[in-house]
Image 1 (cartoon, rainbow, N blue to C red):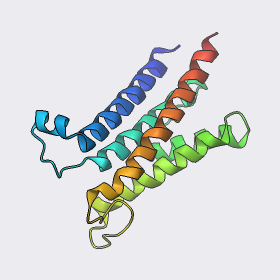
Image 2: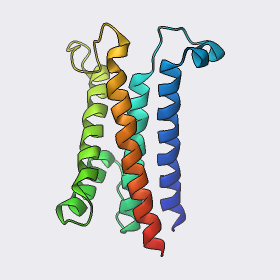
Image 3: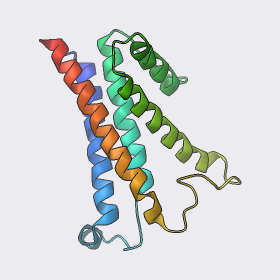
Image 4: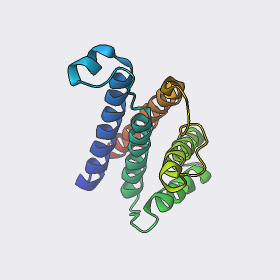
Length: 160
């Protein structure tokens, strides 16, 4: 496997690792105490963000394995649309695209927090209790795990 493809897979795995650790930190009082985090503090937004990036870097690795390089500007859009072509052509499973689209939706929702302060609504923006975001964070972890492991298996299978 090409070293740049390996690099993107490693980045995907690192992002997935961080998503898991942020989830643990958000829900485990012992870890919070150990790290000096306030009991009421959660990092679900970070879980969702890291899960998205694990999917994004996996998609980039797959595209690179096919000779497709995406760059700024609009790197995320270009990556998504190029990845979608492989699903549309039935080369990749539609489930992977649905996972990717869900991750994009969640990530875009998070980005709107920064760019649209006046419209403070949506799933991840204004929850009185941060625990309300726990199911979304857990779902992000589950989907990112499936996506990253599927792409990694495909890429490792291409080596044989």
